[in-house]
Amino acid sequence: RAAVEAVDPDGAHDLVINIQGDMPFASPDLARACADLLARESACDIATLVAAEADVSDRTNPDVVKAVLALPEGGTSGRALYFTRSTLYGDGPIWRHVGIYGYRREALMRFCAAPPSPLEKREKLEQLRALEMGLQIWASVIDEAPLSVDNPADLQAARKLV
Image (cartoon, rainbow, N blue to C red; front, side, top):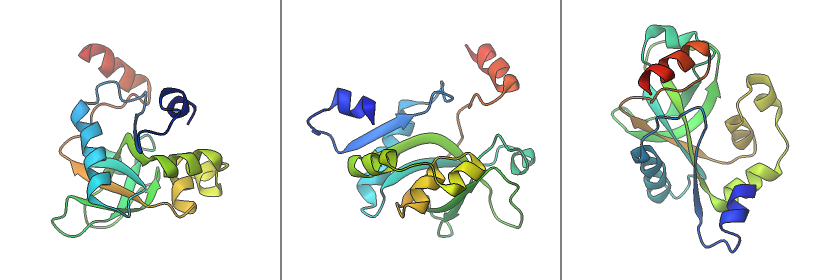
């Protein structure tokens, strides 16, 4: 919020894209995908991205945030119902959350003004605060998640890429 108010104090822009610091190799195309989703879905307050699990171990890895989506069969975007670090069971794809968000400015201001929510504290996932507030989060499916640096092994992989 502070960055938005410093860069755009007059509110000329109504969309804000946030690429989290643990995603150093995120392509600019990912920011565009979030902006496009906000443009397509008028009910969407916050846009984000997901990719299919990279490995079956993603299902039980707490460093991999899983998104539960209302995604029509064959669809490429849908409303987020929940996010979790817990193991997901059952048939169907496991969607790996990608730490990029597109916000409508009003939604970002409301979100930042709200205190951390019970589910957010429990799962350590800030997007759950938005869901508890009644904001709609939508996600677009991308082909592959960029490397996220969440633990020492990821850091080592990132250093190799650099």
